[in-house]
View (cartoon, rainbow, N blue to C red):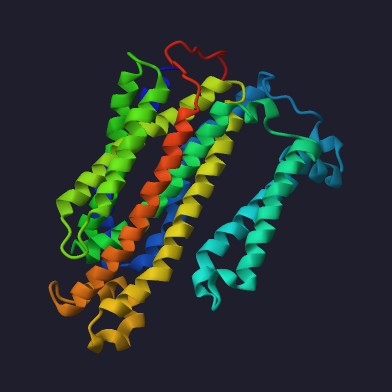
Length: 402
């Protein structure tokens, strides 16, 4: 299993090359077909790129069925239409998915839209979203524990302390990361006066650095496989140091070099944690690894959404007010336009009174965002302490079929 770290790093290496096309491509799209077609073109490109993978998946699915590795409980043609609906609803745990998806959606919506309500958090709509969302998630847990006819994971595995705290670590990590990174691109263009291409390069340092450092960590696993200590003394500290340095940015004239250095440190943290969060789950139960990975992916996606929602809540609740405090009086009639337009913000000359006011608003708002993100990393670091001390050099994968 100690080879998996290097393989995960190797799989991500194409981003080291392709990321350099991102900036020029984004700038070209904005200057030609526009951002709407820039999004829309992927509706055609993604199916083209995924076709080879789909062919391979269908081929091996057919091979697995022909060899008897996949056995249907009952041929579909022997069931009625309602019987098939009932069967697949039970097998895919549709009721459980509806409960958890609706509950999480309501909680995320409450965080995202509270600032648009006249009464803020005291709004009846927001309170209803929070209460109903919480009750739906509790209902999901009780349903899965006592009523679900088909559970995707044994409770003994779900309760395993390494599984629990790996997921807590992943949730805290991705909430923190997406809080921190949500408005970095805008900040680079306005506060750091970077072009679209340069801002894209700097924003995507994480992908390049994480892919590179992932390979280094993968090689290190060949010599020392105690993955808990990689996370404890390398992965999480890299995140804390990188995000912590961003807190020290001055509100006017921050150093682009310090921003790049911070992003590099965070990318090294990502390159360390990414393979480890998968390997801890595999070490707990190889037989249930696909289900464990699906559970973690769900938690990671929720963490990303929560992080984005929290950063949006901070931004909408603070940035406009800071603009009102720092903009010169003659620009206050344009406050709403400045607040809502990155183009308008960056149109003011660097060093002008209006641009300095915008920079101050960015700096003070982003500092709150960076402090929030860095504080959450304490939860991630604490969760790692509760992992079992797993040595992947001593773990062995079982079975020959994938």
